[in-house]
Image (cartoon, rainbow, N blue to C red; front, side, top):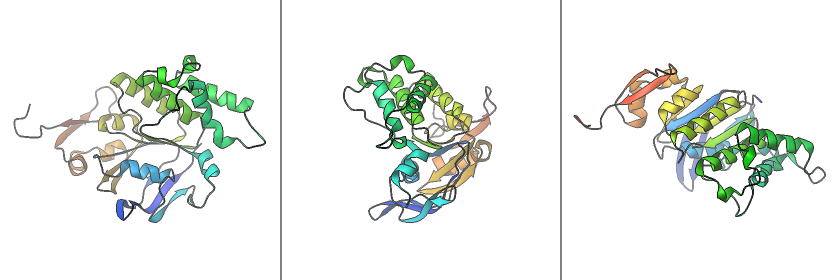
Length: 262
């Protein structure tokens, strides 16, 4: 469960427009990495490239040193799983049925549903505190419940690398913390997520990748990345950085956007 994902001079484009350019990034195995940056900087595109949902225009995504591009889709799906930003469930599907779909990469025509699959689904539901929802349909759930169910689906897949695109979007603070706590508890799996909240990223991540204009401009620990000069460069925001009184991790205190702003 400590797969090593890296990119080498990776360029990802939609048509003739490059969104991610020349990105060489090392995602530490068995750690929680968060990709941060302004809207439109290429974070989600990079994540899609890591999941092999976008074919590189140049460069490569490497899993334990091997290019994933020529590998069989099922082989990659057993090792790398992705939870997109706004997943959609079929109408009327139950929580148990949805989470069970996470086991598809592990099945063959000669080996259908097994005791191992059942155990994996139950473990995923337990880890996300959704076991009591198993018979309910997904469309009956609250936003926070749905997000935990989708996370259970990703866990049930049992990938070595888990990719999550803004898994806390639209959640209140308590549910954001619930989701991030679940992700921390999945270590030493390799976890890579996109988050918008820099302070939550600094609190939960072991490693940060900062992106600007499609390029990975810095990568390192939260203490190395969350500095006033780098926050100003990446986010265009003047700030002070102090120690979080609860965790000791870097905490960004932004200045007003205009002199005297309140």
